[in-house]
Length: 146
Length: 181
Image 1 (cartoon, helix red, strand yellow):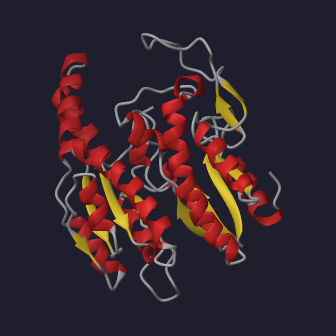
Image 2 (cartoon, chains in turn purple, orange):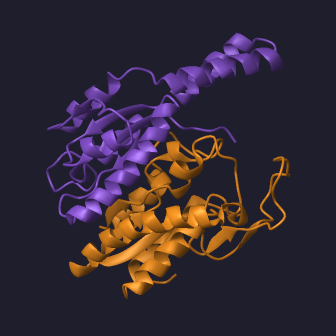
């Protein structure tokens, strides 16, 4: 099977994953735009539980970052910056969107992930080696992953 | 209604083992059912991602069943159990939505092959599927049992032979509505 990942990941405050009525549905916007979601702990959790969850999230972000995935933060979460610093990762660009449209525009403006560009180049090599018209094949692969 | 603690990859397919991502990011067939039924969504960590990395091989349960991986899973399970306990104190029902066939996140079906190892060359297929929990789910189950917390389970079923989204949806709805496993 073809791997469909987007190489794009958003760290998302709980209120955008489980929005209150009338609030922007961040999860729906991110799903439609093809972004993966890493949900940040609910603000109501005990501090120690949140700290442990954030530490686990930071370890995962570090792994994605080393491999050239693109990150953004949607919303805010106390303790996130400290957790990321503990894993040696800078806080990515972020937004606290008031509307779904605002979030959609922000996501659309993000650059192509380095990992996606690398995957496209690998696809180009593979296509060129295995079939006639390799350049066309590479374009098809990259576009599909976009 | 209650709180569904879902496997990490159901919201983030980027965490999948190579060639394992079914879609770009959010796996909507499960998320949509949870939302339609009014369940709150909370994401669990991916135990394999931070331990074995993005370049990990496809693996069976025995390959992850080491003291070090269990310590890693136990540490993550303590955090998730703390979150679940907070929800239980609020009177919420809990369902764990795992990934059937996963060596870490299987809830009723995991993968097993005691002989697998060495240079990775084996045929595609599913002879390794077997009943049981993945290692992280087992650690979480133990931690929740220690705290006296009960829960239901459901699983994403792409790896199971005969998979259809309609069957997966029916099974998930059954668990959410009636508590059937």
